[in-house]
Amino acid sequence: MEFSFVVLKILLSASIIAGISWYAGKNPSLAGFLIALPILSVLAISFSYFQYRDMEKINQFANSIVVSIPLSLLFFAPFILNRWLKWSFFPIIFSGFILLFAGYLIHSRIFKT
Image (tube, rainbow, N blue to C red; front, top):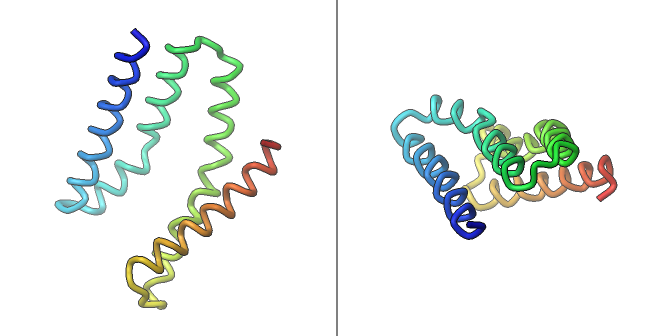
């Protein structure tokens, strides 16, 4: 039962991500809007609830997501700044990961993890 639930979670999550990334080639604006929706958060919260049925942990999980949202936006800053920087893909994404790591450090300080 546990293994089949994990497989279901993987297939559903992967299908959503693959579908939206495919759609980004057709309509980048709408794909960006779709990926910004909390679809994966809803799935992860639901999966966690059905697996553990612990509302205290679900509440902590949701609070962590809320705090993480503005911090995770740091990843996109180099892409926005690239209008002026004119860097290629790899320096931009590497910079995004560095800023995302900084956001994680802030998040871990807030939640003392």
